[in-house]
Image (tube, rainbow, N blue to C red; front, side):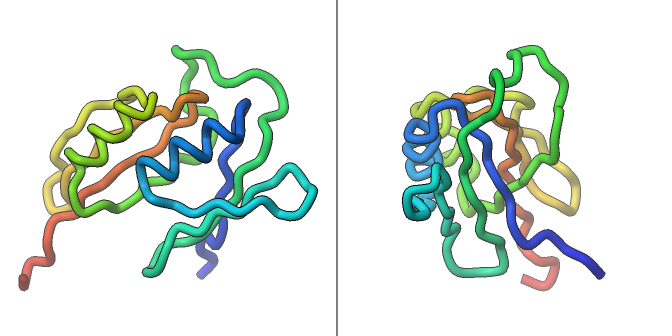
Length: 127
């Protein structure tokens, strides 16, 4: 079955986006030669890596509907990540809520208006 293997973030100010995602998730960014493209290393585990590209056109309006795929990032401490996201210029899109049998979930916007999910999964039932 096909599954996601790569994601991209579009940013009006790539350096600001690098600072935001480094602060919030600890991701590592490396510019890919002279090309305006940054490779994103999200760390060890079951996740995928991605890239950051300069946005072509204006960022989404504050009241714009979701206009692309939303990536959700699993975290150990949702409240700590929310606090860091807000301190780093992120804003709430949908506040923290509990999804039965899934965990606590919130949706945020990065400083460029891109929406992403943050999930603190419930522990496994047999834990």
